[in-house]
Image 1 (cartoon, rainbow, N blue to C red):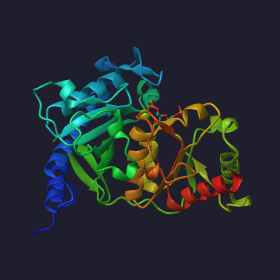
Image 2: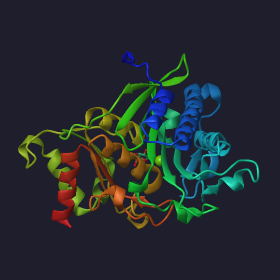
Image 3: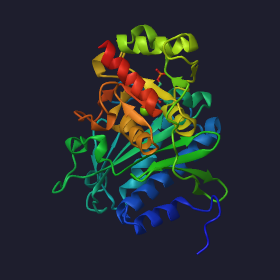
Length: 343
Ligand code: AHM
Ligand code: MG
C-alpha cells in the first residue's frame, strides 16, 4: 500500500484509522466530526466580521457576570444544535450556560441519548472579536458515568485525566483544529475550498526548554509572592539567576497563545491574583484548563496550577476557576519550583 502524500489525510480518515486501531469507538468518532463541523460553521461566521452583522455585544451576561458578545451566543447555539441530534451525547455543558443540558431536555423523545458528555467554551478570547484578532473554540469530552439516565452538573465533575478527547479550533489567518484522543496531539488545517480539515502536523511536540513566556503583565502588582519572584527572575534575563534572556508574547486569546506554544514552545500562565483570588483564578478548569492541559501533555509539555498537576485537580463546580501554568516542560517545572520555594 502506498504512503499517503503529505496533507492528504482528512480528519475523517484520521478518525476512521484511529477507530480501526481500537483507540476510539464509532460514537466518539461521530462526536468529534460533529464538533469539527460546528467549528466550520463558527469559522464562517467569524470570518464574515462586520459584513455578517455579528460583531458587538449581545446585551446579555453569562453565569460568571461577563458581558456576552453576539458571536459568543451564536457559537454556543451552533454547537448546541449541531450536537443535539447525533445520538452520541448524554448532555452538554458550556461556559456560556448556567447549567448543563441533558440531551433529553433539548429534544424530548426525539433524539437518542448517547454515553458522552461534551463541555465547551464556544468562543474563547471574546475581547478580541471586535478587533479582528484570533479567537477559538475549546472542547472536552468525558464519559457519562454508568447507570446515569439524566446527566446533571455533578456528573461532569471528573478530573482532567478522565477526558476521552479534547481540542480547540483557532479562527486565525487559517482555521485549525488541534485534537487529542490520548494518542498524541495533531493539527488539522481547514481547506476552505474543499471544506475539509486536513492533517498538517502529526504528533506536535513542545520543546522542553524555552525563552518565551506569556502572561498579562498589567496584573503584576496583584500576583502572589511565588509569581512575583518567578517573573522577576525571567525579566532579570542573562544577568539574573535564570541565566538567559526571555521574550514575552500575550495575545489575550488563550487558544492563540496555546497554539503558539504547541508550535514553537513557551510557557503560558494566568496565575492567581488578588483580583480573582476569591473565584480561585481567572480561567475555567472544565472548559479551558483541562482540555488545554490534555493537549499540552500529549505533546510532551506540562500543565500545573503551580501547586498541583492540572489534570489531577478534583473538580468541585462546573464553572470552577484555577490558576494555570502550561507549556514547555522544564519551564513549567521551574514555575512550580518557585511556588514550592516561596509559599
Ligand atoms: P473568555 O473565555 O471570557 O474569552 O476569557 C478567557 C480569556 C483567555 O482567552 C485569555 O487568556 C484571557 O481571558 C485574557 O485575559 P486578560 O483580558 O486578562 O488578558
Ligand atoms: Mg474562555
